[in-house]
Image (cartoon, rainbow, N blue to C red; front, side, top):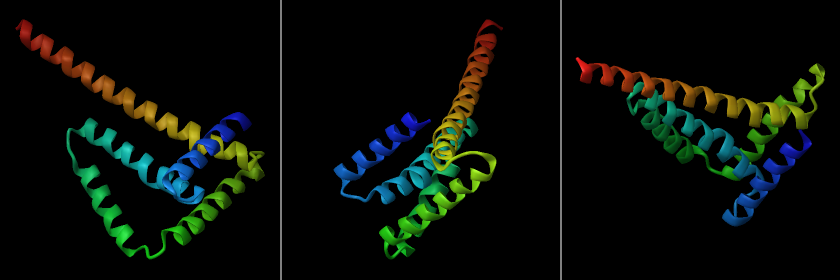
Length: 135
């Protein structure tokens, strides 16, 4: 768990260094904007629509219009996230372990489920079209 935590932290620090954003800002953008947006892309692909992507983009634009200082906002949201992750210490999960569980394993599990559903949908579509070609 320590190794995974360090890999993610080093990666986020690297992105912060090359973008000029703070580590906290990059963390918030990745976990509260980029990852959820990619989930919306996958769900829209499952539905064959573009609703969630459009709503998410519009919400994000409105959100950023009303955020006067993203650095302060990021610090507050990051601290709230840390408090959430630290709350699992009562269950025996350290901050590091709960970070890996929620920010890596759960994120990857959601990706795997969405991608598996998309693959199954495509497979059913191909099978259905193949049957129609035979008839």
